[in-house]
Image (tube, helix red, strand yellow):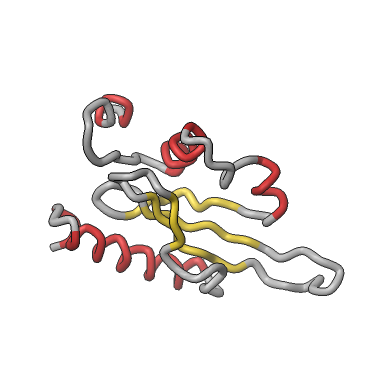
Length: 123
C-alpha cells in the first residue's frame, strides 16, 4: 500500500521514507528542504525514518567557513507532527557527534511520541 493511499483520509499522516517527508514539507510551502537551504547548511538527510508514523528523521550539517575550516559534521533529530504537518527540531541543532548517538535519540523520541499518541510503537 502506498503512502498516497494511506494519506487520503483526514487524520494523521504516515511517512514511508524521508522522500515522503520532504515532499510533504515542500508541498506545504516550507523552504526547509529547498536546494538553497540544504546547500547553505551543507545538510544531508539519512535514509531512515522512525516511529509509528515514520515522522522522525535525522539530518546532518557541517559548518563550512574560513573561521572553522575543520568543523566536523554533526547530527540533528527532527520530526514532522503527523497531525498538523509542522516541522520541528526534536533535539538541539547539531546536538550529536555521531549518527549512532542521533539514531539512539531518534528511536527513543519516536517511542515517546508513539506512547503519547497511544499507538502501537509506544509499547
